[in-house]
Image (tube, rainbow, N blue to C red; front, side, top):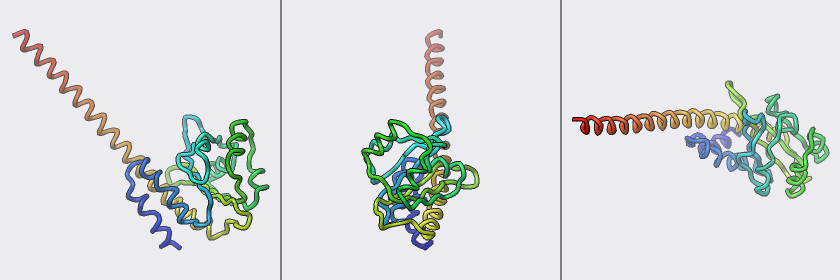
Length: 200
């Protein structure tokens, strides 16, 4: 089981930026839970206090507009509690929504409805970064304890990759700021030297 997980996470480990990591999260998740029909990777945005889809498969692009609050759906509950949720019927899924909106209704009407799902928190010791949800559209398929263990193990690797990518992005930004300051200082020195030459 864990050999399979490691096979699916080497792309995550090799990714340096959030952009690269995001590209591989869904592919690895689908390989980990091979019978899933769709997957959604949401990241928490602290400015809006909501979970934002950053990668997905199995839905139309308008699903990216489906940004959920922490009290509105199963993803929010999983994020807050940092506990995995497994829902194996459409009725359970429908009951998991605690708030309704015209945007959500429009998006869900335009996309396939899941009959079962498993949602895991993406977190490490320092923070919870978001959620990863796998969905099935077939009534013949349910997520069991093995799927739960597999996806939880995989999500821990996603969290590690996401944290490392954040550190990489912060360092890259710091280097960019230092380079900008150096260029500004160099430009100011050039102007100063030109002014001195003019006075002389």
